[in-house]
Image 1: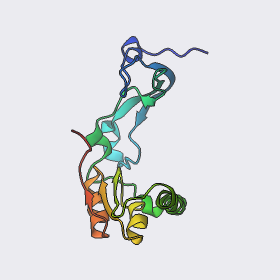
Image 2: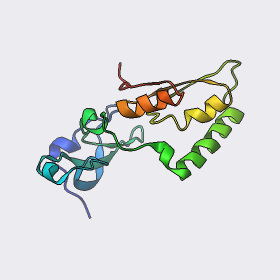
Image 3: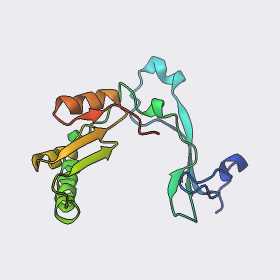
Length: 158
C-alpha cells in the first residue's frame, strides 16, 4: 500500500547529502515524548507530523519534519539514562569494547554528543580518561556535572 505524503514533505532534501528524500512511513501527528502535561495544559500540547524518510543516496533514515529542538530539550527534560539498568549494561559493554578496540592514544579524550546524565562517560572516567558531555537539556547536563562528568548544556551547532 502506498502512503500519501504531502508534496512539500516529499521534496525535502536529505539532512546529510541534500538528495531528495523518499518518505516510507507516516505515523501521523505525535506529541513530544515525555511531555507529562497536567490536565490544564492538554489543549496547548505540541504535536508534529512524524514522517520517516529514507535517502537512497547516503542511506540515512531521518525524520522529515524536525520538531523545534527547544521543545524537546529544556529545563524540565524528564529522561535520565542512568535510571535504566539495561542502558547501564549496554554502556559498560560499549565502553569496554571501545577501550579495547579503538582507543589507542596515550592521553585519550572522549566527547559524547547527547550525553544525557553522563551514564556512558562515567565508564570512561573509571578508566581515567578525560571526558566531556554535551547535552541540550540543561537540568540533565547540570546533574551530570554535579556527578563529576563535565557536561556542557548546549545544542551541538556551528
